[in-house]
Amino acid sequence: MPMVCPVCQGPFAPSGRRVYCSTACKASAYRRRQGARAPQPLPPIRLRRPLTVYECDSCGERAVGEQYCEDCGTFRSRVGMGGLCPNCDEPVAISDLLPKEVLPSDMG
Image (cartoon, rainbow, N blue to C red; front, side):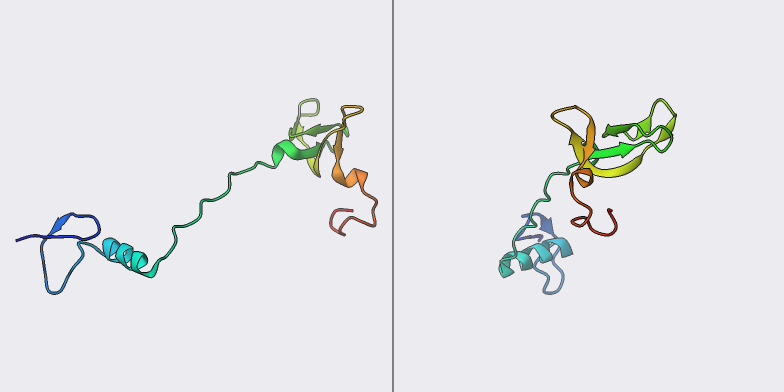
C-alpha cells in the first residue's frame, strides 16, 4: 500500500521508517520546520554601458554608451561613468568634473 508524502502529496512505496518520497521533500520539510526564509530576489540588472563615457585612442572622439568608433574602426577606451553635458550636449565623465585631489589614485 503506497504512502503519501506530506510535502508534495505524491504517492511512494514505503521502506523502513521513510516518511518523505525524496531527499528534496525531506529538505523542504526541514526548512519549513526551521522557519527558513525564502531566498530574497536579486535586484534588477542595471547595465553600466549606457552610463559610461568612452574615448577613441586614435581620434580622441568621445561617446556615451558606444564602445566602437565608426570613424576609426577601432574600440574606444573607457573614461568612466558620465553622460551628456546639459549645456553643450558633449560626453562628459564624472572624473572630468572633479578635482584631481578628490579622485582615487586609480582614476586620476
